Amino acid sequence: MWLSTFSRFALPALQRSTSAMTCQALRACRRPGLAANPLRACLTSAQLRGHQTLGSASLPEARHSMRHVRALDEDRLLEVEWEDGGQSLYPFTWLRDNCQCPLCTLQSAQARKLLMADLDIHTGVDVVEVTNDNKVSIVWPDQHTSVFDAEWLKKRCFSPAARQAMQEELFLNERYYWDSNLRIPTADYEEVLRDDKAALAWLLALRRVGIVYLKGAPPEKGHVARLAERIGYLRLTFYGHTWQVQDKYMANNVAYTSGKLSLHTDYPALHFAPGVQFLHCINQAADGGESEVVDGFHMAEQLQREDPEAFDTLTSLQVDFTDTGMDFCDFMLQSKKCIIDVDAAGRVARINYNNATRDSVLDLPLHQVQPFYRALKAYVNVMNRPENMVTYCMEPGDIVTFDNWRLLHGRKSYISRPDRLRHLEGAYLDWDEVMSRLRILRSSVQGHM
Image 1 (cartoon, rainbow, N blue to C red):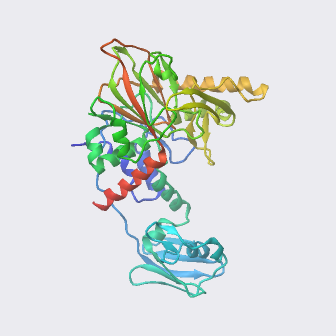
Image 2 (cartoon, rainbow, N blue to C red):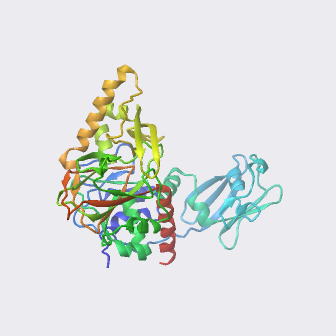
Image 3 (cartoon, rainbow, N blue to C red):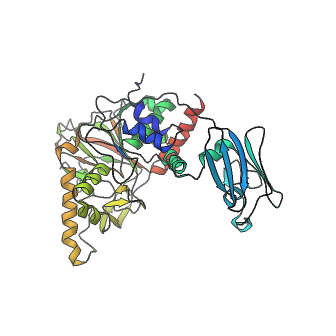
């Protein structure tokens, strides 16, 4: 039976509430003395203490009723007054564009059939009213009728708070930052495979915290593929659908040696790096081989706070990555990326750093070379601080699942014996598949409460 100690971290993602309410819940979990991320108002830092097991709980679902609707013809807006006293405004053009009738929407695919060429972007309305079953009915000038459900409209309100809440529901962008005090959230492998609530809690934690440990998988090949089937399908790369992390003669990757691996993200040499990584321990080394992880988003926040110039350099200068070899097939990759990607709002969105595949080609003006090295060294130094790094040792049957766009992972050197050859099996997925399954599970779990 899973415990519910993690529910207080996972549940805000499922609550049908405004962003302000979500942020309030998250602030309650913030570690004393560590401020919220200045890059985003609702991004919080949380220290997860104790043994964190994943749980789930029933979630309330609000219902909204409309008191009155009216057309504001001069502004070409529909005003909805809700029973709770709130108001929402909806543009006529948007309402016509999103008519839900069978002529305008393919219901089986929830896809728009109305062509942009046929949309009158200057349309008015003839009649608007609230129906007896709490829906908005609109008759357009061409006598076409559109009917909108109250819940559907409420979720798509154009107010800043409603828009932010909808984006959070769709993408779960809020993150829980951590440091060396993190106790990695843990779940049971078989339970994740068979129970939707367990699988949902796993994926929520993976999204929010960035790393989840699964215990109890058989120590044999094939189980990262089985776990991926719980979500959708594996990401094929030049190393295959799955890949074996072992000592290899004439290794085509530094991971296939017994030496230390510095903190890195996988595959920055691809323009679209895999978003999620699974590693399954089949056999551990006789000595050494401990895994190391840091929260790259948290480290970027620290860098911005301590050294804004370095942060600006790593978010603006593109550097070259390369990967060449033969595995699933032969490959010769090149890409150009910033070490730290930020979105249009300035929020950290992705970390791209692998020292092994950072190219000797450095396409920068001469005067930017030294500032780049200084900035990268500053970021790496922040990551390598003992207070920021989590170290753990995988045992046979353990599967670690983590966010490859956010976490940087490494490994201490190790020594194997003939009877103790270190062997991990790995696999990749993309965040598109993972988030798709998360949304499906969330809908399914909520629908059965």
